[in-house]
Image 1 (cartoon, helix red, strand yellow):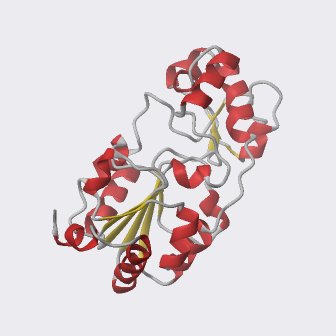
Image 2: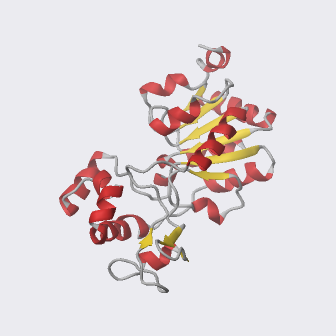
Length: 254
């Protein structure tokens, strides 16, 4: 155990929240890593959960990971868009108190970056800058030929496979599909932000996630605060763990 872990090991939940609050107050370089748990609190589905995975396989006869892959998109584009529009673009999400809290932290000047592995772009509804969308966004779509940009609603409301209204070519969704690499420029900026962070807030995920592990490996301090509802065997790698809903805790910290 490092010094921070030793200090927080015997704390009550209330003391952990107060200690996390004090760490953030004293910091001028906070970075947030937001996972699927943040979106689930807003109403998003987690296709990695057994119940959702089984439902998708029964309804579409393929697993979610296969449907959302580059290979499936390229050879079965109409089926891809049928799934994408029904299961992702038609999902109604309501921002929780997490987002106003992030906005408040950003406006204070303390928050230097938000790294997200989600694709819904709810942060766009708030004054939050320096957001690194490592898996892209449902709002960033373009024609594969003429590069005209299209809003999410254009794809969601299209009949069949969405095509460009200028040249008739297919529209490429702005998300990273399974089997595709992350954009190197965005990943580099995200890692650089983590390496310079004083406090690192990991929200709604666990430290076993491949992308989270990669970024956390570049963190150089001992103020990694993990806020997540579910316990995981990798929690011990965090300096401070709070097992509660992100939307309940984060507003208390800022």
